[in-house]
Image (cartoon, rainbow, N blue to C red; front, side):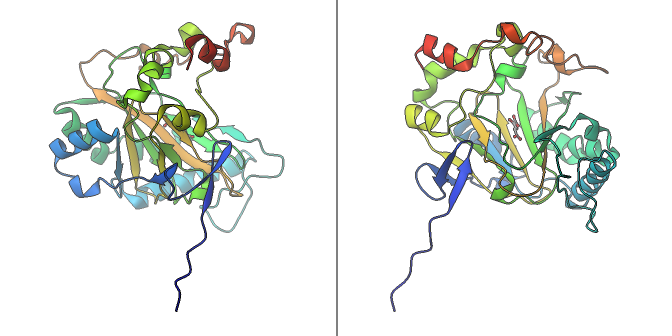
Length: 306
Ligand SMILES: O=C(O)CCC(=O)C(=O)O
């Protein structure tokens, strides 16, 4: 009997199809076995730049938050009614990307993103008290949409450089929902040095640059090295990474919304980016406020030669 090779699986990452399992797109390594060993987790984070932790959050609570969010989206007329309280299917003529900020007011949302589990985890990572930004980024990403490749530092780089992003799926996510992808090691790979020294010094409010470095994943790894990695997620899993991790998302090719949050933590007592804290965080106060002053990333990249 001859073994038949399984067909290549193509996944749409940003604007390009990449073959899963190829050198261009691999899968994320699971760091869950190191839970309870902060030194090992810190070493893994320093080396690869990310931590994939399965079941860190309480799955039932995450699903309860999803139920509350779906109900809110239905009340807004954004999501279609359905017998399944967890199904988030866009209503006809609904937008591609819906403002998710109102979903952060769902009671179970905050219970998840500020849970004792994640706080204790961060305290272990920082070896002391941890602080989370009061601003929470909740994404409701519609079919066809994706997030372009970027560093988080261009959006929140005015305080600690030890800020960690926690990417939290609210629901089970297959690749087709548009999972997050990172370039492992891109925070220290030498090929990215010039990118860190140019793009990585931007501040979207001060410099009014568009924040994404690229829409095409190969416009990153094809030039600077490394490969993209992603995985499928279950409610309760989180992906954690630092400010200089190059990341983007797969395109949402499903017929449903992708509900995910990115929330930020840092060591308490370190300088804090004042845009994201307090009762009413001011957020991006200049970026996009005067469209005629916006600087296209393509122009900046030409200027930097990257
Ligand atoms: O979920 C997304 O599409 C983008 C998330 C992101 O860029 C982040 O977590 O920093």
